[in-house]
Amino acid sequence: MSLPDQVLAAVRAALPGSDGGVALHEPEFRGQEWTYLKDCLDTGWVSSVGAYVDRIERDLERITGAAHAIATSNGTAALDICLRLAGVQAGDEVLVPSLTFVATANAVAYQGATPHFVDSEAVTLGVDPVRLEAHLRETARVDGDVCVNTRTATPIRALMVMHVFGHPCDLDGLAEVAARWKLALVEDAAEGLGSRWNGRHLGNVGRVSALSFNGNKIVTTGGGGAILTNDPDLARRAKHLTTTARLPHKWSFVHDEVGWNYRMPNLNAALGCAQLERLPDMIARKTLLAQRYAEVFRDVEGARLLTARLGAEVNHWLNALILDRPDMAMRDALLETLNGEGFMARPLWTLMHRLPMYAACPRDALPVAEALEASVINLPSSAKLADV
Ligand SMILES: *Cc1c(COP(=O)(O)O)cnc(C)c1O
Image (tube, rainbow, N blue to C red; front, side, top):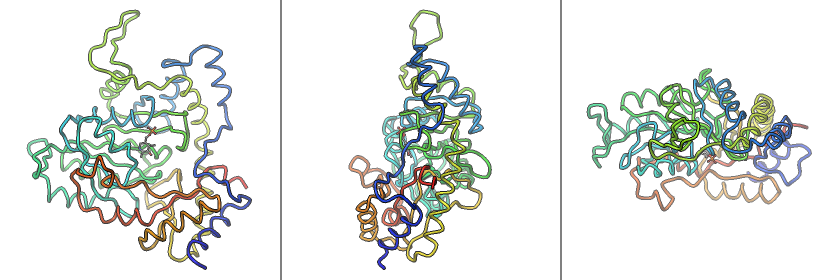
């Protein structure tokens, strides 16, 4: 049997009872969603302040162990403010993986800074600390407390890492590199709610981190995000900047700097509070689904399922199949076959350095990211697929 036919057969075996029409990732509303949303409508608290906004922030602090959570209108807005809080200024460079969703790089551009692309590792799909260290030795020096790109004479202010599909990147290695090179560490943990690295929830190692609750994430607020930090001053600034930088006063409108309206509306927060109550159940069922995929792919030669590395607890947001040998034609054949039979499968994001607006940005050689681009596909991963 050809590899695409073997993969199709394996997916069918992992999803008994599903024959076509299977989405990549569907939201699920089986808890208190209607009750909490109705409460917003009944009380009139639908907009940018309300009890559910406070509640979701406390819920996120409890779940992630971060000292402070600040709810935002979406994950991209959270990333935007994270970089500002990390001290990124116009003209700076920020190290980011080329293998990421476009919002990671866009957030850098919003600050007037330049993304500087670095390579990933095949075990985690996240930034490779060893390759990063080697790249910095070649291209940068530490000048006082600032990392400077020796080619462009530009400060490299921060390192933004991303936890791909909920798989933690090597936070120990990356935090070490960031400290040695005086880089502020920022975590794009948009895909990582519920995942842990050596027992610590993602988003706790970076100075500031971002979560997303978009409709396709493990839990959703419709649209929404959050900033996490353990630093009380940064938390205060995050709340201030995302709420128009208004000074607290009963009736007067005084704003002490340019702020943003990046607030999460109470309606969205209400949906999110109900969703977060079901996060453990989502993770349990998604873990079951991932185990099923792991079983059916054990005997398929030429491809393997991405599994959690030692020390990682994974939320199993999206399951990923990796070809043993990078092969763009084979990758596309798999996507054609699965999608043709109604099993929604997707490739990795087009690498950032290939996008027109980022093609001229500084970068390391990216052999691993490029190989992964030609070898990874996502498989249908909704929690309900485990309910058979
Ligand atoms: C979803 C996502 C974002 C953006 O979140 P939105 O809420 O859609 O703005 C950012 N980074 C990554 C890696 C994501 O997956």
